[in-house]
Image (cartoon, rainbow, N blue to C red):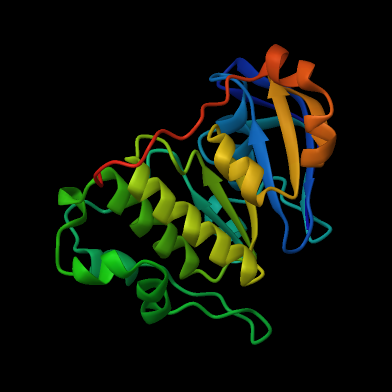
Length: 244
């Protein structure tokens, strides 16, 4: 489905990726892990050409090159993107945010509606009239995921979906990710919460200093404990507390 082949990328004249390779197959959950600053977010941005310039290598989706395509065209090809900073429309209500996307849904694709988003995230329906700028970080994360789903993606990119969330809200997001996997949505997730990686990942890629240093199954990763010691600072999810 998605293939990154020795991708190099830069912000301005500063190169941040020096050869990232990975693949996501239909229906898979693939996790990108690595230390802060290793290149995880830059890798996600390369796929949708979000504020970064691809300078080498190739990115293909369904066998077609994404080179040179603007972000809105990439999204309409069936790729959803939930950035780390969420980017809600703060002056619009929850419901108005969900009405922004213009669906692109061939008949063969699972078609998301606002009602289905509310089924996935019941809390959003409770706050449907609240301004998005007044929501907690956790609620904004749910809203951004829901808004992305309304473009009917076959592949959803989630950049640090647990970042800054209280444990109970993080668990709700994790539950939703599991439901999306069960519905056949492929996911590429930049992640540091080891609980999500352990429970949902079909494959894992380790990035260090802008280069892919490991790619394989979770079982293969676990067989080499030196990988975690050398390249990762994965964090355990803390005990449950009140919602953010």
